[in-house]
Length: 149
Image (tube, rainbow, N blue to C red):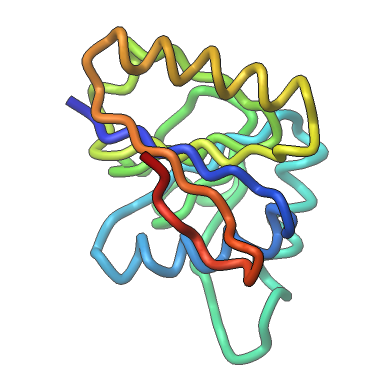
């Protein structure tokens, strides 16, 4: 089964946490798909990942650009890089029964957004019912990720 992780943003923005999670993904030798809620958001993330830090480089491409990159940004269900991990951002959706091709699925949601919170709760129930290993991570007051029971 796929490991499904929920990252509950309370203090930061997606842009504050996604690059670090992608760096850790690449350090493991994994490939990633980042599924965003819209084409505009894909384009914004594409631009941001080129400029988020001067001393770092995250090899990536947005849908339609370079399918062999280790990080693929899309608003669709395409996975041309045979990714190990799926990141769901900006209320992007996935069906729990469609996660079998991934080692891990990470849902990053804004806890200040009631719709995003409700969607995450629904996906948690769906993933658990499908037999996936689920884990919930919440930001501490210092901004670190802490696993919740």
